[in-house]
Image 1 (cartoon, helix red, strand yellow):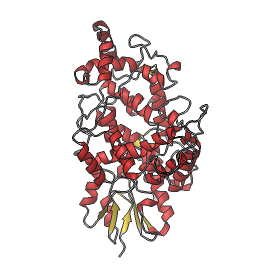
Image 2 (cartoon, protein in one colour):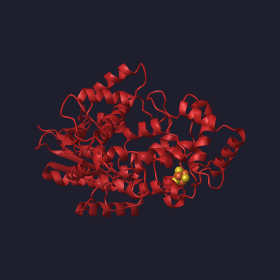
Image 3 (spheres, protein in one colour):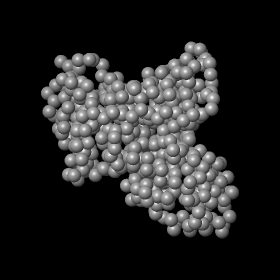
Image 4 (spheres, helix red, strand yellow):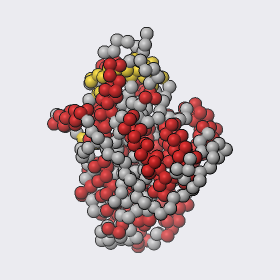
Length: 481
Ligand code: SF4
């Protein structure tokens, strides 16, 4: 007798199925949307992707709408199996259901056993993404110079603005999702952010089409644009496929092989392909494996003893309340698109929170709810571990605290801002520069071991200036900058 394969909402691509005839279960649980306010576009994307998958599978799929997963499973007559869920809570639940078979994880290149083996050996030092990435490349033969031919060109000429990702065309399923979400909102379900035309793929076919566009038109520029921020171009050469990977619409292994092939064929330079593959095979795999390897997880970590709550204007994505040009633009992008690339996340949003001592777990929850690609396994290590420097014991990291001068170096924000990036004091003081200095002074005992920050601290440690900066930043408090 066939087991019915339960596809969770982040397991929606073809690689989560083996048999073209196997019956499938999909479940919509409204309670998940009621528990805590999700970005409206994230809620839309999840529902749209689930319903599109059900439509693709036709008679094979049983789509149930219930209050709980347990209720849905109780309604299925035949035995059910599920691929290893992507969060601890979901795995605990799956293991608690009698008769539900939990299969090994899918949607990642590396295996838990291989990571554990590597990490146990590396544990004598600390766990470094760069070391793991080197190990994974060797193990999976990625970007190896020994196979295939070398590219003809290593760099592109004069930079042009790469074309943005092609727009998504909504259909009747999206119209029904929008109608349902409007109804839920009228019934009291709270969302954050603005609704708008769907901007991220909801099907494997849409994700494949975005991927093909990226490989041809934007990958060649990826290396030179990867960390740049601009008020005029939120995408640059980024793939904007993170939600497609995290919904399980795309299988990362063929994607990284396609990127590698672009290098081997000479269509894209290695300087572009390598950082893209590092993101997929390095960062993405490292974060996923770390999530399961590190017990009991990062959420409670708070090494810098950061205790301030997130202010309401930030929690509500109220970009109009903010005058600082970089933060207004990035917060506005989250409100309007539920997405920005990694540099604004780290250096504008998380850096602002780090400087002001906001609670790491609350910030991680905010990122998870407000970004279309937000997932527990991603945000634990990136927000709590890396960006807020809250857990030093398990991952080798450094505080991603920077001042306005650093933001000015990699963006075009500061030229049109009412503040001056180099100024820490006075009416024109950049909140990131004043905030950076205040952060250094408040945490001096914990930061002296970091050579970069210790040098910054020594350079800015004149007593009068220090007291003035601390008083100014205290006065700014939780007000929007
Ligand atoms: Fe942001 Fe400061 Fe630059 Fe203004 S001056 S854009 S606040 S970094």
